[in-house]
Length: 197
Figure 1 (tube, rainbow, N blue to C red):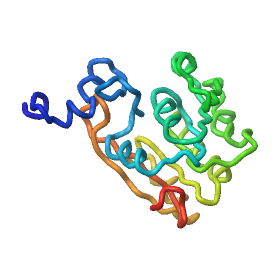
Figure 2: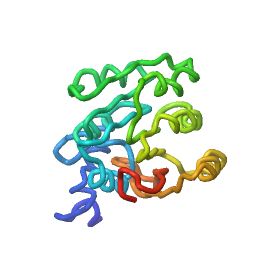
Figure 3: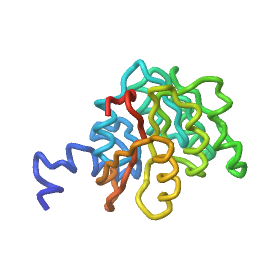
């Protein structure tokens, strides 16, 4: 009970309760959070910086969160409702792309049409295995990839493939805003990466 009602409760301070009530990931003050576990959120707040560019598969509150931490965000979304939610409050440093949800090949390869490379690629949308595969060639030399919800058996083959290509992995686990289970997010990185891992 003290987790819920104590004056300095982590659940209170983090905005966990507000997220559960509003069914969206937010801080106590209502500002946006990604729907990732609190451990990775804290890490990203410390390691992302305004000299980095970010590509994101799947938009929403995460897009708004990242736009405050990096120089530019390109986000692809296949859910029109989420797209319209983000467009309403989209900052100037965000480019939002609406993609046909039934065209998974276009969705996973849309990063290759951006004519640039990115320091950070966040995979938190559809067709995640192909998104990871297609994003590798679009990373800068110091680039990293982040796979949200990476817990479970379904990721072993792509993780093995990335490790064979020289990527190391770092897992973060914990509660997500407003959720009750434990979740994992994995960062794939090489030496001399933009997050100093």
